[in-house]
Length: 506
Image (cartoon, rainbow, N blue to C red; front, side, top):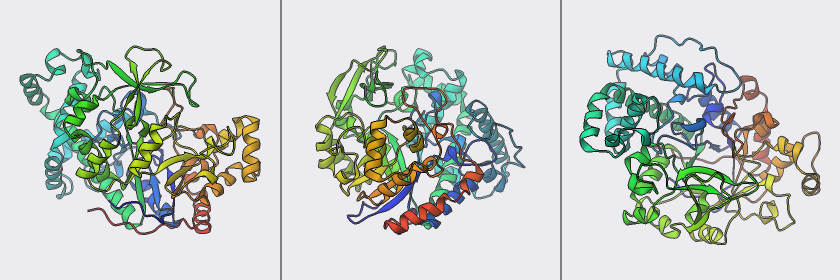
């Protein structure tokens, strides 16, 4: 890991791997991902930002994963399996080309992994895979054993949350766990093999990115899903009731995303227990994140300063209690045990004075979103003339409408301010957003691919506060060849954001 440089300037694009084009109705880590790296590199774009890469659970959200350590097996490339002799061929599944049909993709990918494992167990496939698999299991036993047992037990219980399992399993009775490992040995083996495939493919992709001087920005949600191996395995670290369900949950009060706030439902941390262990679980979590990506964005950074605690069972996030987070002591512990922390702090939303103080104390770059710059006056912190260099600036994020969608629906007074500030051409309002962001003094300027493609609301990735129709957007092969990389190359060249070097990860 290398630290941020004082003179650094770079441009980047947000694109989750699920949104890549390809013949299998969900983007994956195969040829299209490698071509994407090449497109970025050829345009001098040095940053690729992804969403969390874990195995998705509720509503297919990458922010509600079954594990903070495991990878998303839905991203496994069928072509990679075929090239290594683990499948004889891959039939086109015939799903919808535009949006990811998770209900069909998930069981299809699961069956594909099962076929690949059968071939592997029968001695077929690349001869280098077997020792690599054994090494992977040995290197990752700290989390892999718990996760694979968790997944096997979820399958046995037809996907039911661990809080509904028998008392012995829910409470992790040693005898019951030992019996479960024996009974579910085959399912555990397949789950471990799926993780091996994901990490093997991701490692190849990351090496390719490093060789092309493209750094990958990962994403760590500050909270974890209640129905996850994380919470089941370490229940004492979370604010749970006696039955394992959350007693106190996470969310945010009303803000510009929602009039009733956002009730996420994730269990709150018992920070005092984490502190007693010198934040060992978090050290492992961040080390795992940095093993996958070069830079990590921590979603909802403000909770390290103070967080909204909501009683389980509340219908909205309107009523909550603010509590102090672990503060600078947390980051001191991380630096002491990990070293350099190339972390981007997502410091958006309604903030208390504690948050900028913590950001200053840690020295981490915060975020600015240009779509938020127009609702007040010239002191608005999202206006580029108020940026500092230690900033990562975005046209919008995965939670925003696209910039064209914003332009089409924003209040007239906000559009008027944007026109006055940037000289927008109504025929192409996105162009002014890009040029304004790229010439700003922000260290990094990053844009969702949908803005480069000039997509409207049909390109939106997520609408906070809703659980349907999100995370499914995909680019088409034609869109990926539509010339947006020429615009990126021009922006990077004109505003001194062409990529620099990046070491190949070991």
